[in-house]
Each structure stands twice: as C-alpha cells, then as structure tokens.
Length: 222
Image (cartoon, rainbow, N blue to C red; front, side, top):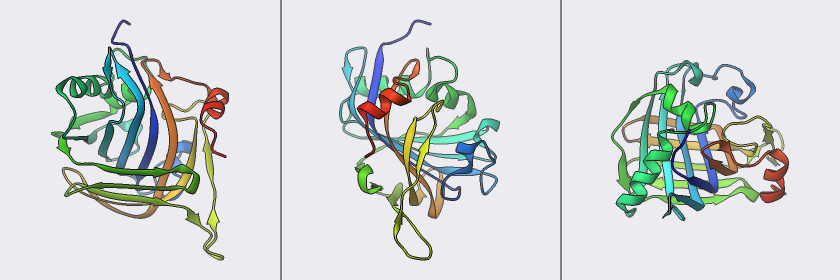
C-alpha cells in the first residue's frame, strides 16, 4: 500500500518485567503473567518524506495484562520537547503503523495496543554502550532505567548472552543485559534486575530493512 517514504536506523534498548533472557522471545508466556516495561531508541539516521529524524530520542512505557499477542495493551509515548511540529507528525505517523506491511513492528503494536495515554514531551537523557552492555535513560518525573551486564551468580563475572532471531520483527540480534527501571508517569512499574536487550535497529515501512547476514555485516556486535 502507498504511504510515506521513511527509514530509521539507530540504537535500541528495552526493559520488561520478565526474567533475564525474556521467555517471550522464545514463544513462552511472560514470567509474571503480565508484561510491563519500556522501549527506547535514538535515531542515528532517519527521515520521513523529507523530514529529518536524525538525533531524535523516542521512548514508550507499556503494560499488557497477559502475553502481548493477546492485546489489551496500554502505552505512553515520550518524546523530547525540542522536536519540531513536522518531526512530531512524522514520528507519530511511523509509530502508528499506518501504511506498513502486516507483521512489522509498528503495525503489530497498532493492533495490540488498545489505549494510548497522552504523550509526554520533556527532556530525555539517553546513553548506550552495546559493547559493554550498558545503557541509561533518565526522564525526570517519568522514567529512570539502566542496563548492565548479566553476572554469574557464583563468580560475579560478567556473562554474555546474545539473542539471535533470524525471523525477528524488532531486531535480528541483540545483547542481553540486566535491567533496572522505575516508571512514575502514566504507566508505573519498578523493575529490579529483570530482562533488558540492546540492539542496533534498522526499520522501514516493510519492517526490518536487512536480513540477519546483512545486519551482522553493518552492525557487528564483536
């Protein structure tokens, strides 16, 4: 279907209430029965019909009462208060899943999220170091989150775990980390050493822009 021409490439991190490793990515039910957390990405290179999205930071908190494929989700988008009206229109068009191929990330979320809370426009601090499995998000009065390496419970040494999803719809390959996140905005949660993933992402109207092999070539994890 015809729609706007858009593309996003950037750095992605997620936090959820599941145990380390996230059973949802292995087609298992969420650890706690429900799923809550946050997703965030910073756009390194992006556009939508001539509107530059370079440097934009996008965050959303979410809650699903069961596994996400059952729907009934709630989500609150969070954007920087410095973006232009044109950028705001462009990013909401993309996040809304309009004119996107079925089975792609934002199109799926458009079906499983039933309630979108009023977006927050504020300052967003975003730090991301995939090599060391570290990330940090700070949004005053809304969200504080951080990622650190998973550690061996016996030796306390950093433990590396890579998730590979050749048929993934968010990413093909990600570094797993331990996540800590507290949300105090429209959706609230307090997560302590639960699942976090960090990945390079590249999306367009047809979903992931590259297959696993090309993604590895462009965004090597080692």
